Structure formats: structure tokens, C-alpha cells
Length: 139
Image (cartoon, rainbow, N blue to C red):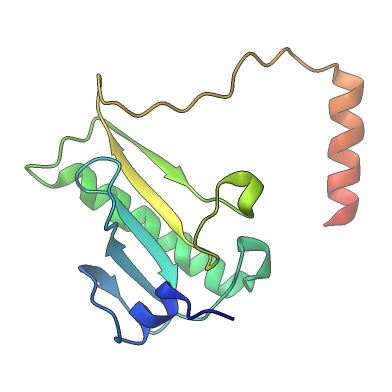
């Protein structure tokens, strides 16, 4: 297995611009920001995807992400009229660093970022209900 860049950052062996750190997570500036102020929150322990993460770590990761998101909105000099929180699981979903992480991306009117789900026709209620039941059962 290749060395994980986020594990190396968490261990202090690679540089990062740290926004926040504690014994469970780090919040770091994205080295390839979508917009200025783009932050990633990563667990210190290696989890390939969100589904691999224990609930305690996951809850803490999102708690810190909420605090960071609010801070990004309040920093003078960061153009932030809104935010996207983005978390990709698996290569089919766009994950390219296989260490779970959550992006906090500042957004503003007219920026170059496009999030497009394409035309999505409404689903039938019976199909939605059946999927909801199956997902609930899987939980």
C-alpha cells in the first residue's frame, strides 16, 4: 500500500496549513482550493471511506466541520455567500485520496464552481417508500 498523504499530514511528516487540530481530527487548508478558504476536515486515524469510520469519530468530524464552516463565513477576506460540504466515497463518486475527508468549500455568486446533478425526474412515491424501507432495514 502506498503511503497515505493524509496519514502523513496527521503524523506531522508532511506540511499542512492547520486550521484546527485535536486528538481525533485535523482541519487543513486544501492545497488545491476550489475557492479561497477551502478547508478539509480529516480524521487522524486512517479510514478509507465514511462508512469505515466509527460513529464517534464521524460525529466529531462533522461537529468540527460545522464550526469551521461558520468560521469560514465570518473571515474577512474570504468571499463566502454560501458553502458546499462535499464528502466523496469511492472512485465512482470522485474520491481520489482514499482517506475519508470532508471538504468545506466557500461559494459566491458567479464563481466558476458547477455542481450539476442533471435532469432528475421525480420518483414514484411507492418506489421511494420501498427504498426507504430497505435502507431502514439495512441500518
